[in-house]
Length: 246
Image 1 (tube, rainbow, N blue to C red):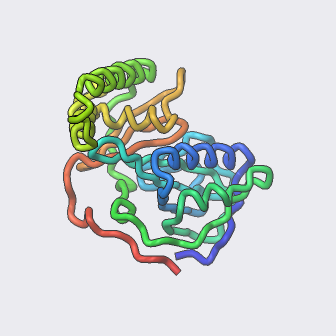
Image 2 (cartoon, one colour):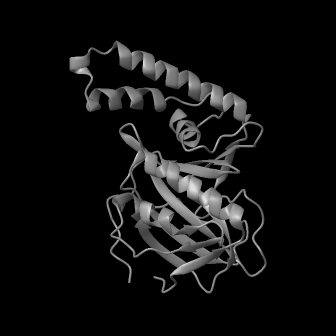
């Protein structure tokens, strides 16, 4: 729970990056919710496995991790953007409307208003683990993007081949799942779905490093702009949601 209504960000760049991330999330789902976790004095360390690649936190500040869901095909991937804070009185954890959060971003003032909490969707009740991550590899970002773009072209071509009267959402999702469930050649053990999500949300950028990790049933792909995470198997509690926070 949190009684805070405003967070001071480290600088205007952090505010602009957060606004851009929220805007991209909302293009996938106009009614999207995000879960927020703020930790004092965290600097650039991990929050639930999310790596902050935007620099070190200010002394005495903290870090805010913003978790959102990307509905790609029949499965989903979590996108995570961490933001450096100028100061934070204590930890905060709540789920809010992504649209309302975007409206509350004050770029000139490098601040963020916290909207009223909402009842969280099921995915918000089960986030990636904070520790226990083992490296899978650090592939060249260009190789990852090439695989993603080739798969996107295949998806478009095969979708176009389906007769209009058979091109239902179920058929399209099944085709997407077939393609995105394939292993990523650039990283052993990581599905194309993770790279597709990272590319779609704007995390894969030329010349920037990427790395993959595993922790139990969870997989993660990290880049300086943010991380994506997904589970490879069901786990207890997957259907649990969150109650409103007051």
